[in-house]
Length: 157
Image: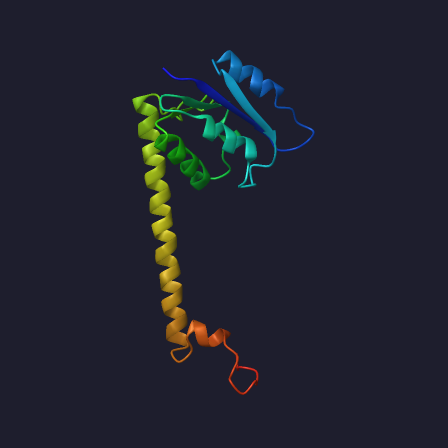
């Protein structure tokens, strides 16, 4: 069994990571990385360091999923990176999110499938919208709509 790397995050200066760090250490984290930064930021330096510290057989641990990711897509991207390193993931309060168990791996596989399904539905709706727009304006392509006429006049809307 490898090392347990903890990651703690709070969103605002008025909050403290102290309780998360205590809980992570009590659950076996040998190292913890903590930051005060909104989860909406895609560039979280301490998360990057925690991921970089993972070796094969290690576990990335958080207190709750919302401390790690703000969206399903963000979560799946992070878990993919963890898996690529040969490491596992565990959330202390979200017991289903634990890739160290067969049940946890199943739940995250289902979650990944749902996210992929959602992406395909969005693409299908987008394609329908594009086809409708092209049908309404058959002589106007997206490129022409953004180009200025060669004579410098304003293009009709």
